[in-house]
Image 1 (cartoon, rainbow, N blue to C red):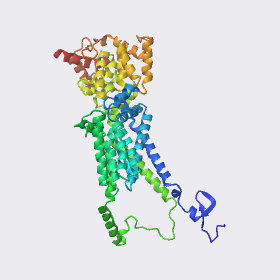
Image 2: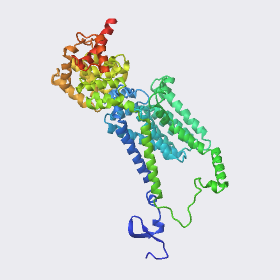
Image 3: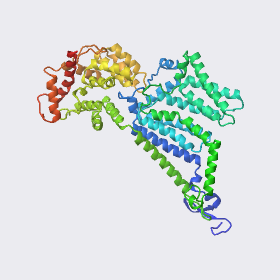
Image 4: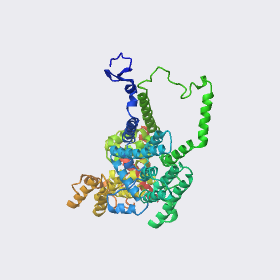
Length: 592
């Protein structure tokens, strides 16, 4: 039909010059031709791509795996039936096993960020679906709020791994309530009882969220408060009987395992706890807000506001939403829908970046970065990263250690507040982690072994500590003890190759004379300045004292160095740095 025909309105097809079509098939804007479902999927994909990039490059989640003597509560995982059997002996053993395995992927930052992003998506989708089932209008905001809270928690270098996995398992199970037939009480109980019992066995900490979600979904129906009370009562009964009959727990202990985190006096001040608590209570809050919006008094208030807006003068309604109507004879902008989608996506991305920059703990990241670089002997990076946090004694000590390996201690004195900070003396149990690596690097193997044992008691069986313990025992010739640590490390993901290789070396050559790490450590230990008694775990070994060194003269020399009045001395700065803390230890022992 020609373009000038009066029977059918003909307009050009967007993006195809020379082609035309009818107004009924072509006049729809570009965003309308793209279905809302695909548009939402693309928007969510871009959101979680940015989420992954921030976790990988910004947070650097491998630092959570490393710990650095700053992060506690990291779950231990072993590829063994004994480990799985021990977890299965208590409520929620399956979730603890999955959480421990999930945290091991943080060894590689890109892989750990990918797993944490997938976990965030598995929480985002049920929260969004739950909000839709409750009749909430802003379902997208509820879903993205859960992911933003998770991002804020990881920005504080907190994980709460077991509770997050329990939440991930409980929310999809709660959504099954919407599709289950609720004809009578028996049909409701036939779903709730097995589901609650399964949760108590596999993910006990998710039972509270499941019970509350079931109660909120029941409140949608007429006289649903009876069904809601039944759901809450069944949750209490399952927790009590399950803990008592299946695991032999006391009633109080049966309910204590339902808490998402062990209660303590300082829990509120725990890093990331505010975001975690908000995430845990997000589902009940969304349900309560949806029910409040559907209540009679809220509807009456909305109707009253609409009545007042319609009765207002025309000039007063100009700035109100919906007051402006499209003029007749004019078509809508074809790109209006696409522009709105782009604007919403951009605002969502800016929100994610804003949450990251607002909540990211940069000081803690610097401390963890420096310790990670020193542990992996990346001295140049450690010294460069330490420049922004030299007021921290642990960072200053690591900077001095890195400068020593780079040969810069002969030109620059370490920036420490006190001489004792060179070996972190008097810093309490938090210093065991750093002291163990420092003494091992200096060749004081017995002292390093003592601090490694104390650090493992305080921070748990971290893979780095197990590795250092195995190296220290191999250097001292404690082959039987080293074999125990190596066999344990062989069952840890991403650590098995190194452990099995050293077990093979032990079988072939028990002396380990050809192992580079052990040979280097033995060469340091054989130095006359580093001889010590072989009392490994009691802490009674003595550090070497450089002959002729006195505490008063050493401190005096250090003060002249800090004031810049002494540029040349007969003794090297490396000797002075080693002598200061050693003389302090000797004076303390003589006084005691």
